[in-house]
Image (tube, rainbow, N blue to C red; front, side, top):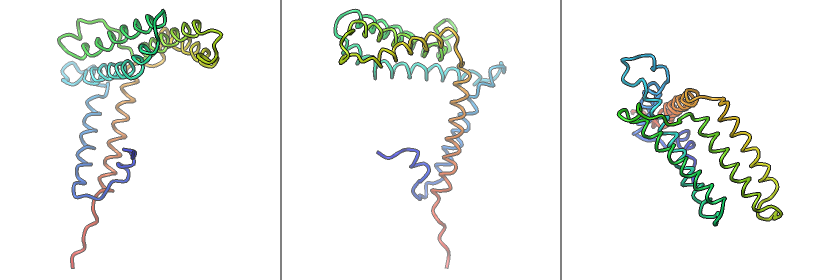
Length: 206
């Protein structure tokens, strides 16, 4: 499978090269609209677009984690305490994801009080995963084939790191949003450069 970034940096010569410039301009506009500097402008119609998009982005990441990873853990946990705890983890994170999506809806968002702090949500997910893995290690104690020592150590690290991130978050949603905006601007630059690279060589007139 080819790398999408390679296609952008080494585009084929085409008469549609101007599409790269169009995408670049659209990305710049999107990045400007999502910048977290418009919050103090009461009359600005896009003042909270970045925040709403971030809420949806957090929800998407949670759902990918739930249905791409955690649901496999539930199916492979068998019966017992570990499976019950994993299901509880799944339900709580699913509620948070739905809440983040609802908070992006103007008619509903102002009436909800759902935790949408990216650092705390990540910390909670890491903490619960580590805690459940500690329980799993307890039930598999003495059987190094099913649960090696390094996974026990990793689970303890997850519990510690998750607690720290939840109790004393070291980055905010604004920080995440700025990182996302910077990535958009970098992509805009890449597409702008790709536009020049994709432009066919002009044919010399005889």
